[in-house]
Image (cartoon, rainbow, N blue to C red; front, side, top):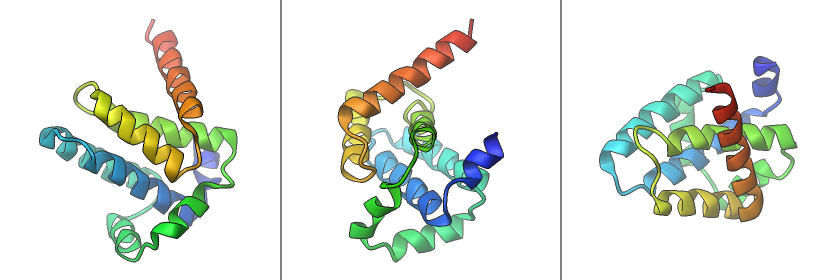
Length: 135
Protein backbone atom coordinates (compact mmCIF):
# COMPACT_ATOMS: atom_id res chain seq x y z
CA UNK A 1 0.00 0.00 0.00
CA UNK A 2 2.81 2.40 0.87
CA UNK A 3 4.30 2.31 -2.62
CA UNK A 4 0.93 2.61 -4.33
CA UNK A 5 0.15 5.65 -2.17
CA UNK A 6 3.47 7.28 -3.04
CA UNK A 7 2.94 6.40 -6.71
CA UNK A 8 -0.51 7.99 -6.62
CA UNK A 9 1.20 11.40 -6.44
CA UNK A 10 2.39 12.97 -9.67
CA UNK A 11 5.99 14.15 -9.81
CA UNK A 12 4.71 17.74 -9.70
CA UNK A 13 2.74 16.97 -6.52
CA UNK A 14 5.77 15.32 -4.90
CA UNK A 15 7.98 18.29 -5.72
CA UNK A 16 5.31 20.66 -4.46
CA UNK A 17 4.99 18.70 -1.21
CA UNK A 18 8.75 18.88 -0.60
CA UNK A 19 8.63 22.62 -1.37
CA UNK A 20 5.75 23.07 1.08
CA UNK A 21 7.74 21.24 3.76
CA UNK A 22 10.74 23.50 3.10
CA UNK A 23 8.58 26.60 3.41
CA UNK A 24 7.24 25.37 6.75
CA UNK A 25 10.70 24.37 7.97
CA UNK A 26 12.22 27.73 7.08
CA UNK A 27 9.70 29.44 9.35
CA UNK A 28 11.21 27.87 12.45
CA UNK A 29 13.33 30.10 14.66
CA UNK A 30 15.26 27.16 16.13
CA UNK A 31 18.28 26.75 13.83
CA UNK A 32 19.18 23.32 15.27
CA UNK A 33 15.66 22.14 14.52
CA UNK A 34 15.91 23.55 10.99
CA UNK A 35 19.05 21.47 10.39
CA UNK A 36 17.25 18.32 11.59
CA UNK A 37 14.24 19.21 9.46
CA UNK A 38 16.43 19.71 6.38
CA UNK A 39 17.91 16.24 6.89
CA UNK A 40 14.43 14.77 7.29
CA UNK A 41 13.15 16.58 4.20
CA UNK A 42 16.04 15.17 2.17
CA UNK A 43 15.14 11.68 3.42
CA UNK A 44 11.49 12.24 2.56
CA UNK A 45 12.40 13.47 -0.92
CA UNK A 46 14.37 10.27 -1.43
CA UNK A 47 11.44 8.22 -0.11
CA UNK A 48 9.25 9.92 -2.72
CA UNK A 49 11.74 8.98 -5.43
CA UNK A 50 13.13 12.49 -5.87
CA UNK A 51 16.72 13.63 -5.87
CA UNK A 52 17.55 16.69 -3.85
CA UNK A 53 18.85 18.41 -7.01
CA UNK A 54 15.41 17.93 -8.62
CA UNK A 55 13.84 19.58 -5.58
CA UNK A 56 16.31 22.46 -5.74
CA UNK A 57 15.69 22.97 -9.46
CA UNK A 58 11.94 22.93 -8.88
CA UNK A 59 12.24 25.48 -6.08
CA UNK A 60 14.52 27.76 -8.10
CA UNK A 61 12.20 27.80 -11.12
CA UNK A 62 8.94 27.79 -9.17
CA UNK A 63 6.14 30.10 -10.09
CA UNK A 64 4.45 30.56 -6.69
CA UNK A 65 1.04 30.90 -8.31
CA UNK A 66 1.37 27.37 -9.68
CA UNK A 67 2.32 25.75 -6.37
CA UNK A 68 -1.22 25.52 -5.01
CA UNK A 69 -2.58 24.02 -8.24
CA UNK A 70 -0.54 20.87 -7.52
CA UNK A 71 -2.61 20.25 -4.40
CA UNK A 72 -6.11 20.95 -5.67
CA UNK A 73 -6.90 17.40 -6.79
CA UNK A 74 -5.49 15.47 -3.82
CA UNK A 75 -7.65 12.68 -2.42
CA UNK A 76 -8.34 12.47 1.31
CA UNK A 77 -5.70 9.78 1.78
CA UNK A 78 -3.15 11.87 -0.12
CA UNK A 79 -4.00 14.84 2.12
CA UNK A 80 -3.50 12.65 5.20
CA UNK A 81 -0.16 11.51 3.81
CA UNK A 82 0.94 15.10 3.11
CA UNK A 83 -0.03 16.23 6.60
CA UNK A 84 1.74 13.22 8.12
CA UNK A 85 4.95 14.11 6.29
CA UNK A 86 4.74 17.66 7.63
CA UNK A 87 3.90 16.26 11.07
CA UNK A 88 7.23 14.44 10.99
CA UNK A 89 9.17 17.64 10.38
CA UNK A 90 7.12 19.58 12.94
CA UNK A 91 8.14 17.11 15.65
CA UNK A 92 11.70 16.74 14.42
CA UNK A 93 13.97 16.80 17.49
CA UNK A 94 11.64 18.72 19.80
CA UNK A 95 7.95 19.51 20.06
CA UNK A 96 6.87 22.32 17.74
CA UNK A 97 6.32 25.80 19.05
CA UNK A 98 2.98 27.54 18.65
CA UNK A 99 4.64 29.57 15.88
CA UNK A 100 5.64 26.36 14.04
CA UNK A 101 2.04 25.12 14.17
CA UNK A 102 0.69 28.44 12.91
CA UNK A 103 3.15 28.49 10.01
CA UNK A 104 2.22 24.92 9.05
CA UNK A 105 -1.49 25.62 9.42
CA UNK A 106 -1.31 28.81 7.33
CA UNK A 107 0.89 27.16 4.70
CA UNK A 108 -1.57 24.31 4.25
CA UNK A 109 -4.45 26.75 4.08
CA UNK A 110 -2.87 29.14 1.57
CA UNK A 111 -0.86 26.67 -0.53
CA UNK A 112 -2.42 23.21 -0.22
CA UNK A 113 -6.07 24.29 0.07
CA UNK A 114 -6.49 22.44 3.38
CA UNK A 115 -8.21 24.84 5.73
CA UNK A 116 -7.20 25.29 9.35
CA UNK A 117 -9.94 23.09 10.83
CA UNK A 118 -9.22 20.29 8.36
CA UNK A 119 -5.48 20.53 9.05
CA UNK A 120 -6.04 20.32 12.82
CA UNK A 121 -8.41 17.33 12.40
CA UNK A 122 -5.79 15.52 10.35
CA UNK A 123 -3.04 16.29 12.89
CA UNK A 124 -5.28 15.03 15.71
CA UNK A 125 -5.99 11.87 13.72
CA UNK A 126 -2.26 11.25 13.25
CA UNK A 127 -1.61 11.84 16.97
CA UNK A 128 -4.47 9.53 17.91
CA UNK A 129 -3.12 6.78 15.66
CA UNK A 130 0.35 7.26 17.13
CA UNK A 131 -1.02 7.01 20.66
CA UNK A 132 -2.97 3.85 19.79
CA UNK A 133 0.03 2.10 18.27
CA UNK A 134 2.44 3.16 21.01
CA UNK A 135 0.44 1.27 23.67
